[in-house]
Figure 1 (cartoon, helix red, strand yellow):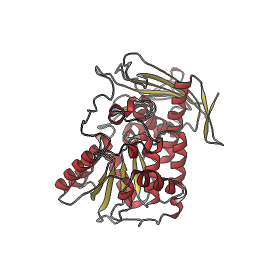
Figure 2 (cartoon, one colour):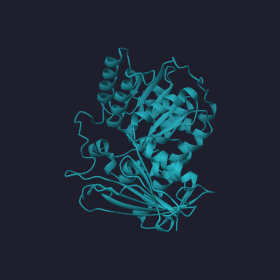
Figure 3 (tube, helix red, strand yellow):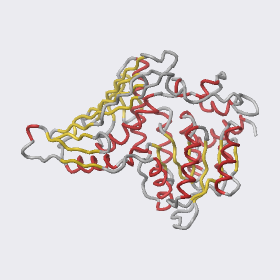
Figure 4 (cartoon, one colour):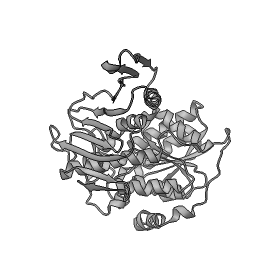
Amino acid sequence: MSTDRRSFMKTSAVAAGAVAMAAPAAFGRGPNDTIGVGVIGVGGMGSAHCGSLMNINKNKRENLQIRAVCDVAKPRVDRRAKDCSNKQGIKVAAHRYYQDLLERKDIDCVWIASPEHWHAQMAIDAIAAGKDVYVEKPMTYNLPDAVRLVDAAKASDRVVQVGTQYVTDPKYHKAHELIKSGAIGKPVSSETGYCRNSKTGEWNYYGIEKDIVPGPNLDWNAWCGPLGPQEWNTLVYHRWRRFSKFSTGIVGDLLVHQMTPLLWSIDPGWPKRVIATGVHNIDMDMDNFDQVNLTIEFDSGHTHVCWGSTCNATSPAPLVRGYKANLQLSGNNCNLVPEQIWAEDIDRQKHKFQRGASQDDLRVNLLNRSRDRKAPLSPVELGYKIMIIVDLAARSMWEGKAFGYDQDTRQGVAL
């Protein structure tokens, strides 16, 4: 079927209101019912999802089958369908266009691991088709996309999980408990970060598949989708996180991992103002910055600082500063250390956990919630607040201004 029909007309129709017309799928799947899964986008992360989901079923953590996979690149989708078929002992369908996968009645949940400019529309269309959704981080490409997705999810009866697996880390759940109980007083500020280093340039580890070029093996226009027609560039296709037109780079790909669980544990309210800087230190070939710094002010008065780098791997340890005590969250620890003036009133606490974050735990959580219809660990409401930060930070870095968030208009405004 043509790209124009599959990639533009049909998605536009869904965006115009098909969510409201979607027939709800059955609720409350029984414990012995097999959950049918489809995976959209089977490159690096999508391939990893396929392998992990099959292992989850093999290890009896959940009862599922991957029944269909999708990718606009024919070599990728054929490879993944063959692998899933062989390992599961069933025929797994290979679709080139995600709308065909969503039309299947044997699919209950979809995993979306496409480039981020497709996240919102694919998730909205999946919701409209009555599917539960696991959408990779960042939740969307920008703030307008986040508004559309959160509205579609809240207006539906679907479970939508955002792929920020650090929310499964026990140390953040302990931090949330301590903060909520008032153990550290008002949390006044916090910090975290995600730093990496590379001799060859971040995201260049994605290899160039020379057989994937526009034509029978790749529908390039379908890949570009919501961004409109783009000039073919194999580096953009294979390493799109390096390009600001297609990704927010460090901010959306790395920092969301650390900001999401820490800010969830604090619950500081709505982002109010973001100031961010970005520079090129080492990787001059990358369009996106290789070092960034974010300062976020919330409407509660809380201030969060976040560092990101792909030219130095020393990351700051997560820390929450409270009026009465601090929470140190390095490694698998959650340690409460009182401020000096409260040292005689508040005891130190040390909490050591045997494990940290688990991506499989987040996958299983979505499958469990697909059965019992409860709220997932990483819901769209949390993803929306994080996307406000991501969007305003990207604009601040590139435009050299502070940006605020207007809760009435749900837009970012230059300050």
